[in-house]
Length: 214
Image (cartoon, rainbow, N blue to C red; front, side, top):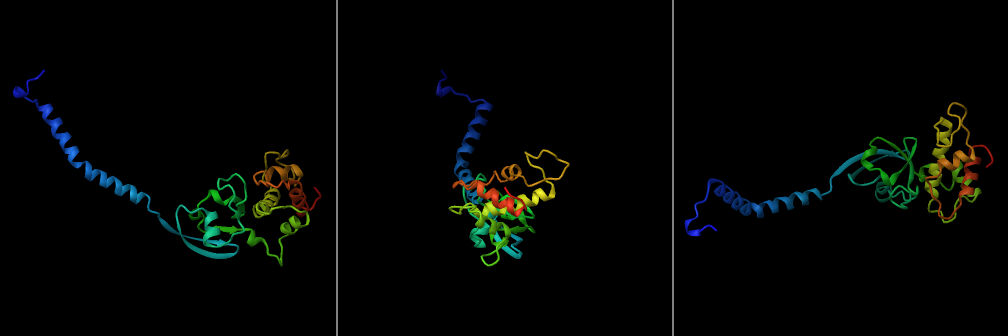
């Protein structure tokens, strides 16, 4: 054991001691700096976004973390689009963006600068129903109605996909005429959940709009 009275520190020991003392002295300032950075990282960042919603040009200043769903519901007050699972699993929030249906809870509003967005409010109104809306009423394609806006938006886009020749997992002939068969409709609508179980009526409504009987 080294006698403290005769301890002769080496150059290495001295450098280690000095470095340790410097770290200890700077620790409070480093902690403050780290806390400041963490605080800044939690601060929301806002950005402008301009798009067309149901044929009307709209401009918003939104938190960059705002989903398209929340922008539609909370900022534009288009509450027909429903928030169901908020994880892209139920389809209640389905809207049509640039001709394609999407789950609006899974995309950010700022990602759709210049896009054309259609919600259930843009398809029709009580005095002038869209054919799909009228068919859902005729065939009782809803019960509680919560999923219905997403179902109808998805159904309209489904028929557009079939007309454009976009194949699905059940399409047998990729090069022939694509028809809105029950199998095609059910497969394409499988992402829209109806917890009331009105699936057969929904298929009948879509088939009627497509010009055939289910």
